[in-house]
Image (cartoon, rainbow, N blue to C red; front, side, top):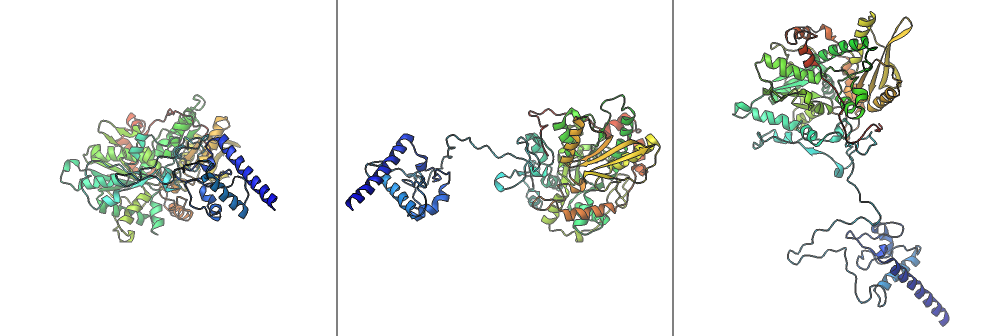
Length: 596
């Protein structure tokens, strides 16, 4: 019996001597390294939180001073608990590690003698041999390139919401608009790619929100008339179906009630941008015919890509560079042509300087905010942009909700006209189910002008998916025109890959960044959690297709403006007013490897 006790004691003693020897050879044992967060790691890499149940069974839960060597390959169960307790006891016994002194409890910061408060904890050092964790990258849901500065908001700590910037003018006054003005937008709401925005662009984009809108309204309420501005709002035709579907109204009722609501806030004029789309489509039609006729003389004449989508344009300029930019149609988008009409034609009619008009556009997507910032659309002579502020359809609804305004209670007011104080009639649209219909109008016009074929109906052929469709014109058994509609960046990338390989056989492509087209813009067709609202989108499509179609050529106001204001269709003034240029933007890093 005595010999058995002797053997057991000797074995235990030998066991702990081996442990101490191992610790001395390693120096500071990570098993006993207690950080300021009081995290103790075992050999399997588990944290103290994971080890609490085992420490509690050993009667050591909550100890932070001498440390608890959890694990160490001792097994589990009651035997392991006893061995853990014995190992902890060895550390404090005379002759053991730390003989004659107690280890300082670093998990409990000392209090200051002067203030009685605990000093701020220093940031915990990264574990030896590991890399310091970088700041969270901002990435979109599609992009796999870590340089991309877009992101999906997945938690509060990684939110990139930025407070809207305000001007000093009127900032001292606190009134009913201040609560509504504190608006924020997220980078995840933007579709533009490749480092999304520079710091300067970001600051200017964040000005384009409710706060800037109400800043001008506040200035107009002050006595200093020198700072007063005429406030004009232009409504995109793709935004009206959103209001109609959301509030269960006809599209004409939605337009009139929205006009009434805006004027109740202090807006002077409310316009419809359909007339601007007329100009854009007519100019695009003429440009395509000209490109087709010189396709054998110019390498970059065809294919021609539509230019109405700012998300696509920004992607092309910053990522695709010269591969694509020379193929983009030079006609301005409807938004920017509307800016020229309001700040040019309408300002002259009202004897106003362009800088005395504050022009707001209500659009279905956030990319329109970036488009308004282009230097091409700024007049240095008057220190005035064609579009001063862009608000999405959803932001208008937020204003209604915060003002506790029921659309049913708003008085209907007819939308204004650009011409001699007239009022617009019923809402009209162009061909196309979910956008301004560039493909259909250009296809029909080209078929008539180039081949003498009068196309009544267009038949779409879906290829890989419903967002990539093609239209062809056959004559004498030969395909003479081949058009395509590519919606969404995945289809855009497939299109670009074919172009790079020389296997692209389309003459024209209607390119839109949003899957499903403009009606599915992120500024209106999304739920609160950022997902597409498919039910609402289906309602919007039904409302939009029910709107009567008007051909751009049949708009007499457009023909009149070509002669009286633009000095003819082929004049230099028409070219300068209705067209722009697109070119590659140099980037510090190449983004051709972005995968969508």
